[in-house]
Length: 606
Image (cartoon, rainbow, N blue to C red; front, side):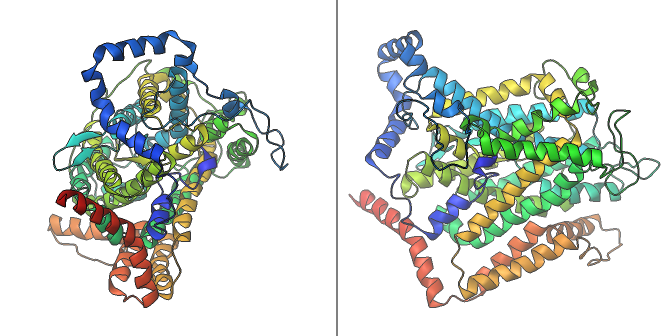
């Protein structure tokens, strides 16, 4: 996950907000070339059936010629670093001319497809390994189980990325998938509610505690999360059948921007900072943090902070001096380079690598899938957030791929993307992985590599599945010291918060919008700074477990900053009357959808 594209990281809705608030801002991608690309998308799937012999000859030519392997791509532009980044005229001469832009269904050289796909996989790597590591740490799962969760996350993300990139026709003019270079990964949004859910499971005695009161391993809690997430995913599937303009009206940018900002802010304090200081297991205690025998210190020790700061600065230096390829993979580099220092100094244990299996796959470990009542409402809200995230990401991918960002085809991509997002919530649970969502950082890779081709996306899926099958890779990830992970997560989660701020930047700050934002911020920051505000709201101690579970779920929702801020924002947006200025802005936002609907009606009448 490259920090150079921090405005697009974590599935932001920044591009969605831009299209929503400035409906005529994206006329440039709608060119004749874009039309040809879309026409190619409609015909490519059947062309080989009409002339299989011609298709075979073309494939043989591609495999046997230099142009078929490498084309005219300018690899130097992708690989050379910026030696003097502060000089206005410091751009290096990286070859004659720029690389051509490869559209969604253009013919793409094999090496270019493989390399661009590898870039996408590296850009996703940091985001894919983080959620399973945080969840495994929260539940004190064994090293073998933690390594499996990392591998399963990579494999499942590769599988559903391939599905999301398809455009499988469905009845009633719909499709499954976006048909674009969309990539899918384990969602960070789920992490914002898992802490509260796991805390409830331990406090209710469902998960065991050690003799000293610390948490014992609880794989059953993970099964509760997966089972409940699978059931709640049905909501996103149903929402995928609503018209896009209705979804935009229900979830305006002033709500989506606030949601994304609070997710990033909460994750910084809840996961990044504890890891930066030595690990969440020893945070707030005087016990030594787990590590190698001769490198165990109390939380916040200077040794840990120095190692975390090294990882932090590695990402910063890569962003300043790195080549486009390096900046795309800055998060992965930030995790790897500090190991050169941490290894010789004794911060790394070889035990996780030795214990990891050489080869692994899904279902090597399984969990009992169950539904946990108090987690239903929070996870329903999570899936609404994932849907908003998906709409923004598909819009951004459409724009950078130079295809339409409104109209009938755009609406099909949106509904197809949200549908796959919902189905992934069900099947990812069966694959032992938390909910998935469309990632947005690949949009930066598309912009830099000038490759929006679907073949690169399929190579990305291949690389992710390969990374997951190699079990030792997960063992290496587990061996990364917590401070190194924390230093990188500070930037990763910070970029999420910045993405939310950019969405809000596209909101016109009328008096009404300022008041809505003030109400959302009041409750969002309130629960963020004082997290026990609603702990004593309900005092029910009866024997009705269903009622107690329902009350617990309400507490989880209103105690989670991004959820309470979203609820307050949506209610305020629905209740507060519009002034003339607000109504004019609403008409401008609805104009593209109305034009598209009118055009569709004319075609039907003709």
